[in-house]
Image (cartoon, rainbow, N blue to C red; front, side):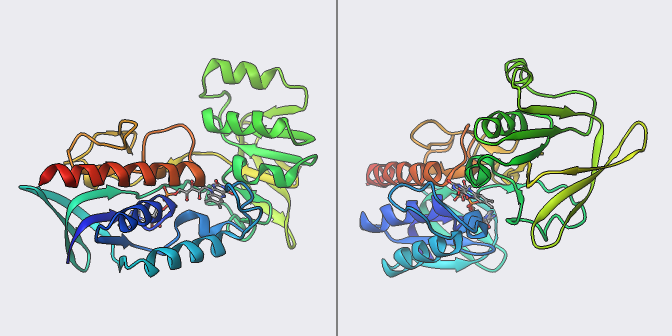
Length: 303
Ligand SMILES: Cc1cc2nc3c(=O)[nH]c(=O)nc-3n(C[C@H](O)[C@H](O)[C@H](O)COP(=O)(O)OP(=O)(O)OC[C@H]3O[C@@H](n4cnc5c(N)ncnc54)[C@H](O)[C@@H]3O)c2cc1C
């Protein structure tokens, strides 16, 4: 299969890139390994996408999928394993097929690291969240918890403290591994309590999260902490090593400039898979649009 633009991933960044490329008259192949729509399909409620007051993540994904497939995209279910550049063509090898494109847009997203603790999946979206920016407003005025000890966890805690009644911050070790400014900022907040040396063992509740069981790693004491929500911020996992022949990575995230260009002409990256500060729907779509427009210019330059 040969197209002008081959897009790796089927989330919001990829679908936006496809939308712009298709409307710009390009042929587009989108390759997704799991489910078109990306991470947002797991979200029960999205309330921060411009012009849409409220929508489920699944409806958002389905609408987007339909919009792009109606424009004539070639949508492939496959996992991309490698990409090589031959002359002015990219050869994209998947588990099942091989695809060719004049440009490649990498939009592979991230996965949020899970604790792997009992009932974590059961209470996901019923009190457990991996995104404070996305889900914090649902717990305005409530008591919540953050598990994590690095920059993201502290950013989550500071953000949540501004809208929630109280925030418990729980860490596995005896200190934070975050920027001093963030630690100082957190310490200065009156509605935050910090608990070090606690290892999460189990999430408890019936229909929704009611408490979390921890073990004190020093005294071995079992402790139950009651909060209405638990925000887990123990890292995001990008999966881009397989593309390191074409792109530079920092902690697994793809380095681009503000035009979404990578170090290889013709290879662009968009969305959560990029090295950047804010990973949101709106920012993923922004990246996808920019990548597609610059990909169009690159294709023109080939002629
Ligand atoms: C539960 C939850 C709730 C959220 N709520 C909100 C919210 O309310 N508002 C908001 O703004 N943001 C929210 N977010 C964040 C938002 O979903 C992400 O920022 C956004 O989806 C990023 O889009 P993306 O296209 O960059 O990546 P993703 O959505 O992660 O999509 C990447 C896709 O690429 C595929 N892929 C990866 N590697 C390969 C490969 N090698 N071959 C083929 N396919 C591959 C993956 O399967 C995935 O489908 C939420 C996230 C989660 C998890």
